Amino acid sequence: MYQPRILVMAGSRRREALSRRVAEACALAVRTAGAEVELIDLDDYPAPLYDGDLEAAAGLPEHVVRLQRRLHASDGLLVVNPEYNGSITPLLKNTLDWCSRPNPADSERSGGKVYAGRAAAVVGSSPGALGGMRVLFHVRDILGYLGMYVIPQQLAVAKAGEAVGADARLRDPAQQELLDKLAAALVDGARRLRS
Ligand SMILES: Cc1cc2nc3c(=O)[nH]c(=O)nc-3n(C[C@H](O)[C@H](O)[C@H](O)COP(=O)(O)O)c2cc1C
Image (cartoon, rainbow, N blue to C red):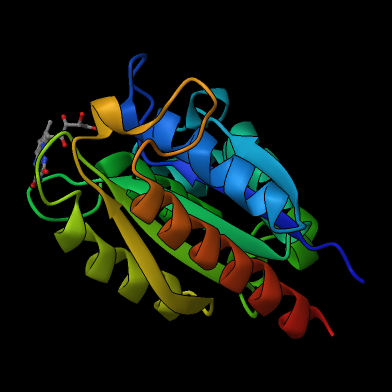
């Protein structure tokens, strides 16, 4: 059976980011569901705030081009979202926007082609009680706009600071079961879209 390649990324570069720990739990679940997983740390892909003048003068930043290639080589994306005022973090929006830009030097692996037709899943993460539930609908919308097929399953990880055990599994068995189902649906979706 085809082993899909899934990128997992958290929408925070903060050193102690809770979403990074949740992303580790997601990566493990998706790997267990049968995918080859690459856990992306956006700290390794720094990019300035998108600015059309900057793009016109210097083209795409080197790290954006690197990330576009990772996205293009993947069959799917799982994004773990901290929630900022009920919505997406500027880091994640900036990253998605930069990667959506065409690179004339590599038109096959840039622009909309890095997203289109791939599977996606959204997970929320918050120290609060709602687990970033509100951001999920915004991110789902954006990824859909980019041409991704966002699976219906989603998960909001509340009290994220305490939610992930040392084994990178969610401490709450019911939440871990939901994550496992989400991971299985994402892997299945990525496989179907590939075939
Ligand atoms: C500008 C800003 C807005 C925030 N808005 C929300 C919010 O709407 N909902 C929420 O649950 N937490 C909110 N928080 C708290 C974040 O969930 C918390 O800082 C979290 O730890 C950030 O994610 P990270 O740990 O992955 O960096 C906000 C934090 C910031 C800095």
